[in-house]
Image 1 (cartoon, rainbow, N blue to C red):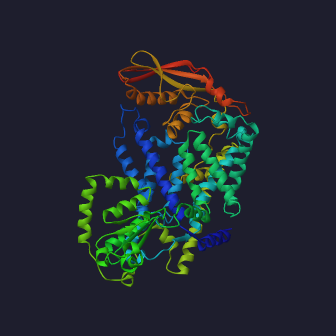
Image 2: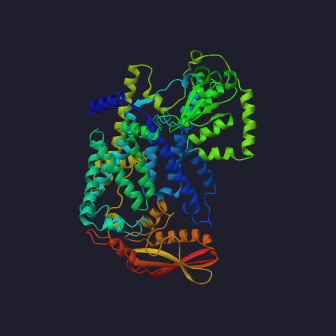
Image 3: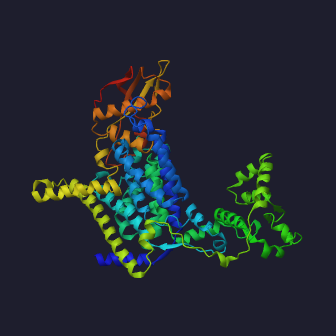
Length: 631
């Protein structure tokens, strides 16, 4: 088995692929992380304070969240990729392990992002769509400006994260689904979409009311998750898995209010898009003929760097850059301008006009389209004249040299990265040894995932107790130790989401109202009359309320804790004083069946509420009286 796996690793290492998919994936990962940090900053008092605004236990949390946001933004733009990804990985672990994020506000998203971040550290993230790539080439613009090369990387860099972050996750999830009756009945996708706590604002009743279609989708998910790990690499089946997977996760993001998890998994499918499709997209968006031809001084280092930067960001290929010394005389638009004059400014022309100096830069911004707003700003009176003076000062004082391209062959820049230490060996023998070590590391990670699947997906589900014998107890303790390490550092957890553990007996839901300053009862802008959790409380705040506070077997202590947190968080936002305010606890019946019921989403949303308790704040002290007779 080891020899087979090593041969596959070697084969995929030798198979070269363009780096474009890794670059896009890195950028999207950074974006998803950044939006989640913004969410944490918005709800920092609700999530991190034991009592929001009263008992502020972590006053430095916003500061560290801002540092984390900087690292995620750097990942998004590809600046200092290796360091930024390591810092991001450490922040995920610290916040998950040492704050309430995992205990009360998780739902599986954090573990997935830790797993994705771990593998991201070892990928060539700076090879495409990165500021690092641009910075490296700008050190030798004379050479790189005339050298157009596509960065190629081993195809192994695509397959490994897909295998571990998607393939094993799907397989583990499918094992757990076997033990849930509504999943076995083909209703795994239907049931959560009929429960008020889980639905988004988009009403998909027209789709949910199609019984056979819903069962088809449910069984399709089963087949998809069981087979993905074995077949996703097949080039004929890859487009099928790509479209099914993207459709399923887009459906999660749109129909349920756990959009971070849906989007987080959706971005992984950028790694599965065939490279030929990216080339087709590039041909569709790029212009066949340049809309602006720009002439620059080939012996000016500043001009070469400027042109290189502009070409890097000209994603629509609307610009053409030619050096004035060799090409200006071939174009009648510039034929009357002496070469010495051409070299004093940046000249350009389009189908109608000839531009020079600052006007050339303004038209470059317009032709790049997405940077047009900056061009409009530069054309504003006052700003235009100031910018023109600054441009003239820089243009007249720039340095020139007469060295040609042969004098500027770049030296290798030695920058450390995990990727280079694994995949860029100086000789074949060393690379062979490194691939052998990599194979063993991948097998170890697969064993850790298998341990979690067996421990939670089989032994726990089948109620097999290993602690009855000395040998079984030893295995149980060893398994728990491995689980702690793999969950903390690799994000390997049981993916038992939306199973019977939660929905069986979910017979009532809870909402909160309050008395405003005029003594009138109002709905807290947290859960509405339908029972939907309102934006922006989706994601981890939804998980806190729907998975921990309100469950089939409600724990009054936990429920009180979260009613206290939610009311303390919202009171100052609503102009209420915790010195004296009153909240009412509303309940209404909910149906979570294992068999299909027509129009269940509407039925659950339209059930009547009743008052089942009261929560009061007196002198900043919380108390409550609850009568949840249906629990």
